[in-house]
Image 1 (tube, rainbow, N blue to C red):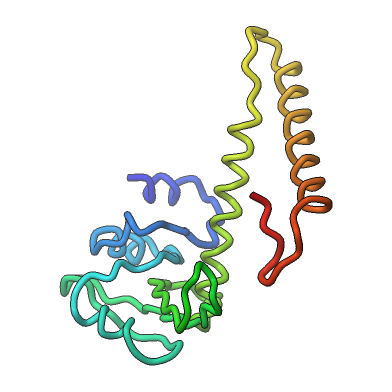
Image 2: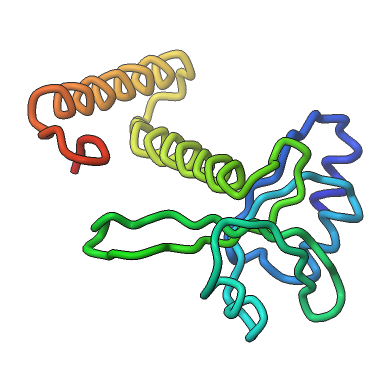
Length: 172
């Protein structure tokens, strides 16, 4: 229903970024039917996908889910280099059907943008002021001041407290 609503609004949707909860044949079929570009991480169901994710290097494969829908899977391999006390190769699979994704690294980088969007929403939700005022202008000013204070605090923490380390500074 939501995809049909988007079709009727004449919006320019570049891509749909979904989480693992939408990895099923119904959602993938609907995205293909409505001709939306999408990127989502795969769930390691079944022996074939587990076998593909356990060997080899970065590559693109065709995968069918429950024999109903076939889609491209980009398997991106990265060295963990001690990140999260893990070593060796980490293999991440992404179901991606988008014209701007050519390599497995593209799939990983485009999907990682999703987390920046979610953190922006989380920051905005934290910045909402609780007030009994009905004045929308006052609430907007309080919201902007709250965002400025939070971003200033994060910048000062990053600049003066967080120590430089491999992989970038850790804020919290």
